[in-house]
Length: 50
Image (cartoon, rainbow, N blue to C red):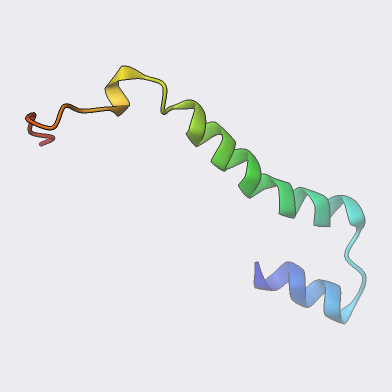
Protein backbone atom coordinates (compact mmCIF):
# COMPACT_ATOMS: atom_id res chain seq x y z
CA UNK A 1 0.00 0.00 0.00
CA UNK A 2 2.95 2.29 0.51
CA UNK A 3 4.02 2.57 -3.17
CA UNK A 4 0.62 3.91 -4.38
CA UNK A 5 0.52 6.34 -1.45
CA UNK A 6 4.05 7.52 -2.23
CA UNK A 7 3.11 7.81 -5.90
CA UNK A 8 0.18 10.01 -4.94
CA UNK A 9 2.30 12.20 -2.67
CA UNK A 10 5.17 12.56 -5.15
CA UNK A 11 3.18 12.80 -8.37
CA UNK A 12 -0.35 12.25 -9.49
CA UNK A 13 -2.05 8.91 -9.04
CA UNK A 14 -4.75 8.34 -11.67
CA UNK A 15 -8.21 8.14 -10.13
CA UNK A 16 -8.92 4.76 -11.72
CA UNK A 17 -5.86 3.22 -10.05
CA UNK A 18 -6.79 4.78 -6.71
CA UNK A 19 -10.30 3.35 -6.91
CA UNK A 20 -9.02 -0.07 -7.97
CA UNK A 21 -6.53 -0.09 -5.09
CA UNK A 22 -9.27 0.80 -2.64
CA UNK A 23 -11.90 -1.64 -3.92
CA UNK A 24 -9.73 -4.75 -4.40
CA UNK A 25 -9.55 -5.59 -0.67
CA UNK A 26 -13.31 -5.02 -0.45
CA UNK A 27 -13.86 -7.60 -3.19
CA UNK A 28 -11.62 -10.11 -1.39
CA UNK A 29 -13.60 -9.68 1.85
CA UNK A 30 -16.87 -10.12 -0.04
CA UNK A 31 -15.67 -13.27 -1.79
CA UNK A 32 -14.44 -14.72 1.51
CA UNK A 33 -17.87 -14.00 2.99
CA UNK A 34 -19.48 -16.09 0.26
CA UNK A 35 -17.58 -19.12 1.55
CA UNK A 36 -19.24 -18.99 4.99
CA UNK A 37 -22.64 -20.47 4.03
CA UNK A 38 -20.94 -23.71 2.99
CA UNK A 39 -21.46 -26.54 5.46
CA UNK A 40 -17.74 -27.38 5.30
CA UNK A 41 -16.94 -23.97 6.80
CA UNK A 42 -18.72 -24.88 10.04
CA UNK A 43 -17.62 -27.67 12.36
CA UNK A 44 -19.42 -29.25 15.26
CA UNK A 45 -18.01 -28.47 18.71
CA UNK A 46 -17.17 -32.16 19.32
CA UNK A 47 -15.33 -32.79 16.05
CA UNK A 48 -11.57 -32.60 15.61
CA UNK A 49 -10.47 -30.18 12.89
CA UNK A 50 -7.14 -31.85 12.10
